[in-house]
Image (cartoon, rainbow, N blue to C red; front, side, top):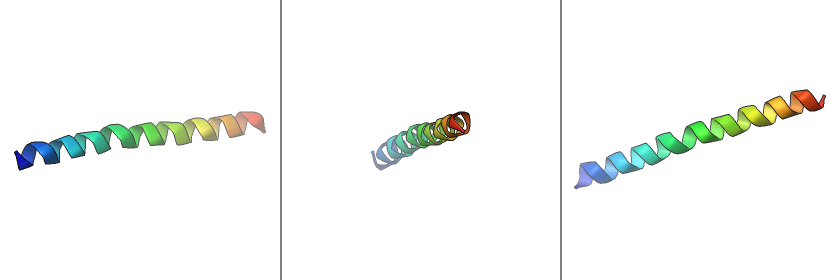
Length: 35
């Protein structure tokens, strides 16, 4: 049971981190286009 809970936490973090990176990249692209 402990391993399953740990895996679920790892999956949640792995799924969230890429979204944050994508948002940062989109913000940079919009800033460059604005200039």
